[in-house]
Length: 258
Image 1 (cartoon, one colour):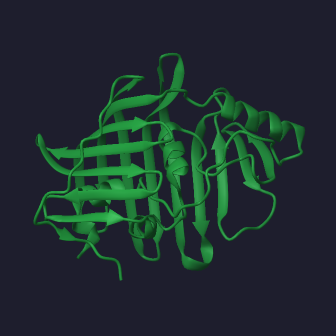
Image 2 (cartoon, rainbow, N blue to C red):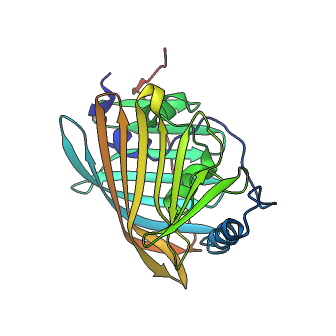
Image 3 (cartoon, rainbow, N blue to C red):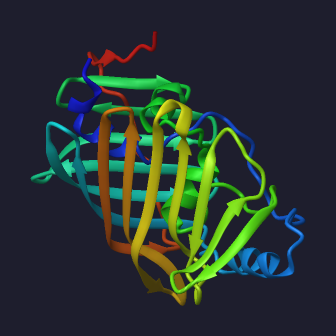
């Protein structure tokens, strides 16, 4: 099966990926530089706080051979569930539901579904993520925890740039806004494998007194393969009742990993 042809799978799997790494919580900051500690502290102090979220996205996907757009209904219970339903011309094409330990989705164009672990989706993006990291990406927080490693801080007109002090398997760079301390750019790369993911946040919106992304742009490169995903939040509501209806239709073909 050509994954690039799975419209909503390609759209959503790029932003909903996991490989089961541990969830980090509040704690001591490993970095010892006082200026860097202050920036990191402010980044977490300005995280959007909510129990549930409901919104709509306009999503544009571009690959080497096609460009497609879809409207996506988006719901989240923080730290618990992410749910999306993708439509084109008012017709539901696919649904995705992610919990802390499971990924499920189905798409109607080819009548296929996936119900299992996170290997397929993490391979699509090419970088190890878990539920918390996906959630962070969507709400304008750094994908990886800034508390756990020591980071070097550089300040410029663009904002605060943080990079790990020690070389790692993954190269990382995080750029934070100088006023709100929200992420404005994130880059993760595996140079030896020719893989990289760059996420930028061209604009934010203020909702209930909190900063939340208005636009998210993701560019994923894997060798000669290039994928760009543009997301625009058309509406967002915090702390509203949400449900997560999901049922894989009968007769669909299962996507089986080799």
